[in-house]
Length: 214
Image (cartoon, rainbow, N blue to C red):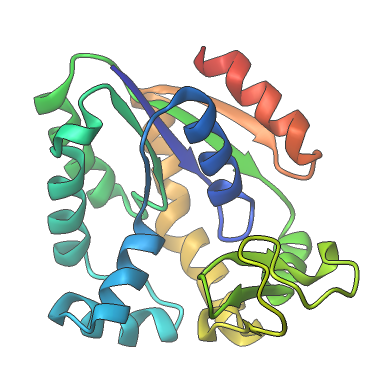
């Protein structure tokens, strides 16, 4: 069973690489961000509670995330493995995740840590937009002045999410340093962890990841 965890600060490219590797290895990509946004769109009790927290740039409470992750990873679609992106974000969550992993497999997690300077992260996130037609995330720096969504082809449908506002971004990064960075030390002691420079071209990062996990 191949279990891959993408770790790093907001904006380092975890989601981008997780989607690419998911496609190449035919493993489900479990993005807690996508799952939470779906819950918000459906206006479920979980989504309403999570939205208030996410709009402040704060971490979603452990009780919500634990329930969410436990259900998803024990689903039959993950029987051959999974790629996890956006969880855990605290040492407690890492410990909870480990109890779930111990139940479903004897194999260790493979942790891919993507790293980049804070200035680069702030620039990336402040230039990020979401297509309100299909939900695709793009970076304005790479659109070459086009207003066309590369995913669905819609024109002028990009919106800036509340959690990509500069003040919220800085708050998210502060929380990452205080709360999530210790997770890195947890995995250095418990699992196979590999660090990759997130400022490299996307294809080079993908190549390095595939060399590690295959």
